[in-house]
Length: 188
Image (cartoon, rainbow, N blue to C red; front, side, top):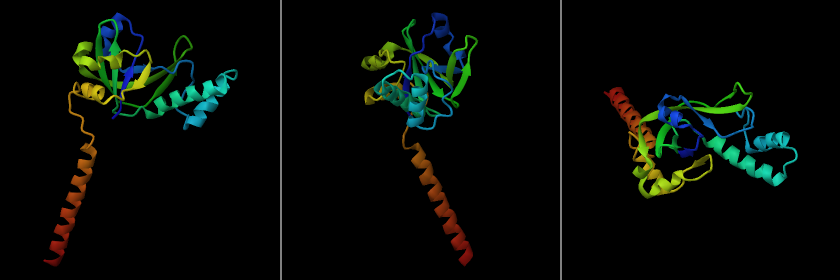
């Protein structure tokens, strides 16, 4: 599970009603539907077509950033949304696939469906790790181990990266028990 921080330009009223939102808007401004892009190279080709006068280095850097963000957003990842007006942080879980639409102003809008965790936290609740929310970058992953732990501790469940492995081991043990039982019944 990756933890993301997404800075959305929300009004005070939108911050107060954050739990009513069913999606978050991704910062892929001025880009068309990304759902058909399958690689960083395709992303780079799209940017070259959209911005033919940009230097190749700029295109490559932007394609790298966009592709790494777009391709790494996964179902069940956690997104922390700093609420600037209230000095709080709302936490959500990605609950669906990327969606694209054109709004009433003919602007490209990139969405992710989310499910909100019930509690909103004060920035101070994250202690010295609150600095992770201070960046002006619109979307980024939390890479600092202490900051990740501080955010995970606020989730209503305890994240355990070995949970999937436990299920695999449980299935293997159950299959071995069934095999042994079948073998014993066959000889009996």
